[in-house]
Amino acid sequence: MTFNITIPFWIRVMALMYREEKSYVRQISKKLDLTYSHAHKIIADLQKRRLLSLNKEGRKNIITITKNGSVMGKYCDFIEAFTEARYD
Image 1 (cartoon, rainbow, N blue to C red):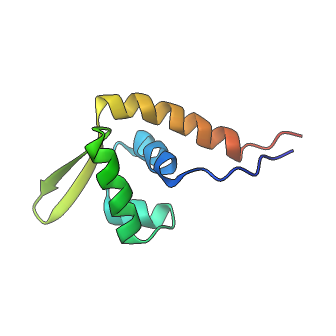
Image 2: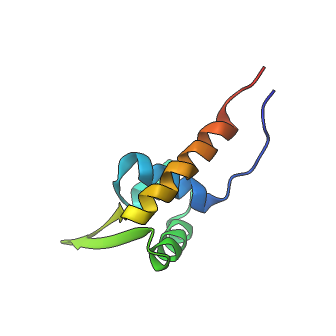
């Protein structure tokens, strides 16, 4: 038995950031198969909620997960793993 549940993209972003801790918008968009603008919009919203932070290193914008984001990311990672698991 599998669960056919569509996970909101913000949960997928938080789960990815929980596992990687540091990334770029372009990497996130490629790994989650999102357009750059859609990924940027999701990240900006999560940044407003203080779950992710954006730091500049030269020309690159590095996204890191905050302490509160790490707590949320742990649950998002669990949700993502649970919905991808197969139960027979």
